Image (cartoon, rainbow, N blue to C red; front, side, top):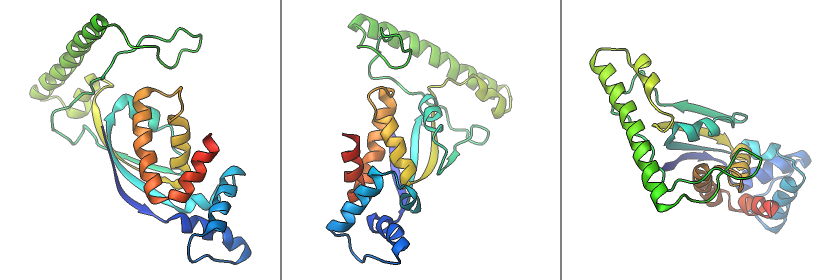
Length: 214
């Protein structure tokens, strides 16, 4: 699991001054009034000032996580590694724990962890399936098959790499949805890393955002 912040633009002061321009005013430093203004903007969903700040990450994650993540498109830009051009051996994601199917009527989410015997059996089945997929891919490549076709056998658990750029508003929206208790556990771990970077670079905004989630 890798999430690396590679660039960002703007600060809490950027948010404040993008809001204050409505009154042709400007703050030079973040003060108590400015913190209250940011809190007010988030509480009342005056979101445009948060669209002037951006963050950019390099992310390494399995395909089944990124396909959920890439549903977040508004205010975002994506570029992903392509198996048409990359010849390094594929890698797959390994789950720390296998969980049961939820008992409730809603199909999403997961129940408790499987027994120790269940964990071992799932690991064995998973390892067999993913190893066979990687071996098949390698065989096709050795036969001279075009990588753009050979990649079709690779599993959703294959790890890929991408660059994600998002406005501050979009990044906060991602965190709000993917830190939710009903989000998949694996993507919640990524969302927490994204949240940590937002907190470091936009501390006032993040504190106000977290207050709103309580």
